[in-house]
Amino acid sequence: MRLHYQRANPDVGGESLLLRFEDVVDDRVACLLVNSGRGVSVDELLDESRGEYLAGIIINNAHPEYYCTLGENVREETPIYAAPDTATILAEACSAPLRDIEHPDAILTQLATVDTWTQLVRGVQLHPLPVGHAPGAAGFLLEISEEADAHTLFVADECTIRRAAGYSGIGLDLPVAIDSLVLSGATADPFAPALTETLSIVCERAREDATVLVTADEPTGIHAAYLLGHLGKRLGSPFPITVTGRTATLCEQLGYSIPNVTRLPDAPPEKVLTPGTVAIAEPDAPVQGPAGQLFEALADDPEAAVLRLTRGVATPITAAQCMVQSFPWHNYPDPETLATVVEALAPVQVVLAERPTPEAERLHLPDSFVWSIDDDLVYTLYDGTDWVAPAEIDPDAAQHIRQRATAYHDEPTPSEYELSLPLPVRTGTIDFAAEGLDVEVIQERLLPAESPDGSWRHRAPNDEDVASHDANSAASSATNGRKTSETTSVDASLQALREQIDNIESVVAGQIYQASVVDAGDDVCLFRVQNPPASFEHGQNVSLIIDSAETLQTVDVSEQENGSEPSDTDNSTTDANEIV
Image 1 (cartoon, helix red, strand yellow):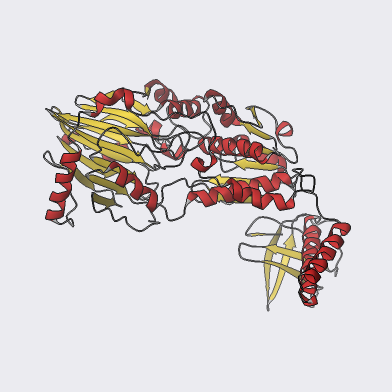
Image 2 (cartoon, rainbow, N blue to C red):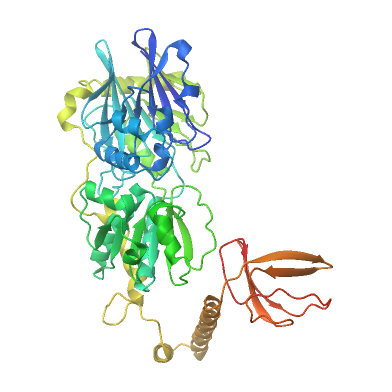
């Protein structure tokens, strides 16, 4: 048997690869596509003149970029393998497609749920294993039998030790030996701090009685709803959460019962969007589907907040008065996690699919052969005799690794451990630390703003509050023997803060008008306002707010000396790169 590896889309998404099993099927090369992601074309990957054919497709998780080209690449009678809950999410996406999924009926017909050892071709079996990362996500352990020998390849993809919405992370104590471990590259930006920061902001906006819309793809929306619902219960001051669209349907199909969360798959915006609540809908870009409908309903509400949980580069949103923010939801392993996984599983060979823009240093794993691959060339992982080491590995070091692995891997075949292999299933209890969420940080961030009776809602400070704060500051300074200048500094800071709040309120109270920039020459710049109000008069002075990606400037517009009619606007704001 010879095993070859090729990345299927390294320059586009990087989530897909092709495995070629040579000499396991007479006169043919059985190929296994792992994820049908962005830009993947099976027609371009397979060389039918060499006898290559598509024996199966694996889908590791149900983020849309993992199956977006599945309809284009599925072949008649080619099974599509997925763990049970990933298969559920994928089937729902095909039953009522929001995105342009080709041939959804063929996908549903050939979708095969896998929860035990399943034969790919003669001599090759596969079994799902938990890997964390996303609800229902799974890696796949492949057992390759060759006469009396058995070899193992574990496609763990974007594994995490963290749980994901209750689903276990990758197991570090598997009862089987792993010969080759296939992983996605590490990220230099740890996920846990970003997760804590993102959910803190959601809680803060809900506490301030803002209408909050969280947009995300289905697995991410489920993940966020799970954590926010339990977080509200832990804080003791829950805020209502409504999950809508397919995300709501899937929460029910997957058996979630989350505190403070209501599922309304087909509810109109007025039933979902209310101050002090959080709505969660798909997709992450709110331009279509449930998220698009909800965004349209609150776009003109300056008190509302739209928080996008994105897995890639966030696309810009059209002009809106509501706040729109994007937060990366990159639940990937960091270098330390990958090193921990490799040390625990002790594979002979590690294959790292580097990301399009490598975000972390290459790992130093002295006890394994490490392939770091960032192109679409075909690499031989097993040559019929041994697991292959990269050319830069010293031959003596390679022999040492093989000897260590031979002694460690002298065990029965993996399929004999069927009853003891873990499955990607959800636990029944919440564990914030295991999810990577720091509840104490969120509590410290929220509690100082609570009212004295401990109520959840934030009460804006009035004049008495400010006077009391100033008096307390002065008394504290006197008690501690501090100088009067410290109190003066605090008073000045408070006054500056009040002035900033007044400026913001004046901007929010204005009207939005679109305007075009006109270069009149001689350093004269005019603004032609679309549909100007009747209240505009020639020579009138107004304030102009220019909102750009880099700065926000206030400009006083006066009568032009050359006699041209000025184009003025009221105070207004809009999205980045728009002129108002």
